[in-house]
Image 1 (cartoon, rainbow over the protein chains, first blue to last red):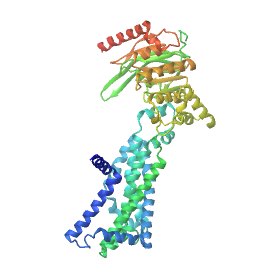
Image 2 (cartoon, rainbow over the protein chains, first blue to last red; image 1 turned 180 degrees about the horizontal axis):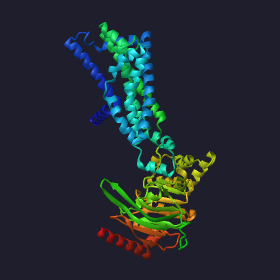
Image 3 (cartoon, rainbow over the protein chains, first blue to last red; image 1 turned 120 degrees about the vertical axis):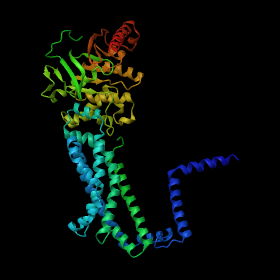
Image 4 (cartoon, rainbow over the protein chains, first blue to last red; image 1 turned 90 degrees about the vertical axis):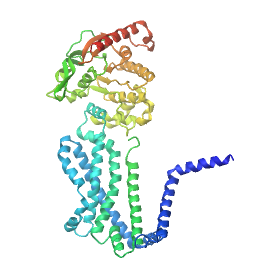
Length: 262
Length: 272
């Protein structure tokens, strides 16, 4: 009798741990998907069951060409993201230098942000052809805004007292930026990077839908065109894992770069 | 004892009719009416008053952070503000400590103390670290050199902030409620440390506080401020000999001084 309540408590505690609860929820979702397909007798062209999707994904992992496409997508995403990081952080710093400059530039910045940038991809293809150019450009444009805004927000969040102290040390503008504002803004900048890397992947895949003959986005469209729905789902799963890996890369970089105390 | 008659050309700080008005839309409000004061070399001066009495405004003007609307601030005879600009070469003579220690959270305490030295670059790189450690030892914080600011107590952070302000050997230490956020026991300990530091270094010290007891314990002279609009009400000499022991606060003369200031402040507050 005495052991029973203990076990109950430990089960409840275990379920509240994310390491247990999250996989449980995932398993539940997959089981629900499987049950739905079986019960409603859904056509595999519309929604394949989880098992064939998993089978197709394993086949994908064994396919050297699929890895080639994965590499293309990853390379374009990372290249675009790096461009966005350099230009986004620079633009954020530039805007932080002056309130007037920020006010003058704000309408352009907002217009750029609300504009559906992927609508420009066909134009990019006209400009740059069917190579990696349009992909990298799209992957660079989508994350630019969040990276810039987070940089600006981070620099603007420096408490007044820190600025007073720097003034009392007679710091130059550049010293202030390098010794105070950028270190202070680093956690904000990395939050922008974490959002940005995922947006860069979105940009690459959408550009691959529209243009070119390589990359996971291209592969996905070609599979849906030939009604290989299970293969398409396998590519979606693959993209999901690629996104996770890229995000984890940025998170790792954050741990290496952002100091402990900040 | 500092000389009773100050020579204004050599006094570290002379205030001539210094005033500050803040422009808040149409209604310009006076933060500080014209105030004059001479701070002598090696003196410990305390600005005492309730919030809104202009004492912090005046300190910020002396620190070069805020431009006076009118009047002059002279440091050793030279005007601190000229044509709307603060003279940077005079700032080097000032060390600044705020209520918030303002230590950079991503740097260790020693690295924080090194910041002004490396920004000003007036010491060879190799000689900076020993100076930082010596300053930390001076304020009784030698063993926290390698810690990060969030790992130490508020009192220790304030000590580190004082060490940082002293690192480039300024003549004058300006402190704006440096112990205002500390508990009473840490505050008492730091008041003693500050007195010891002052006796050893004989730097000119200017401290802003709203604690009457702290003012009486530390000051050679108390400048009493009154609010609405802010101005200097009177200057009170504090005659107790140095070094002042912690037990001084329980003596009759000490408590009489505190009571006198308290009654004056209450009367001023009622009138405002």
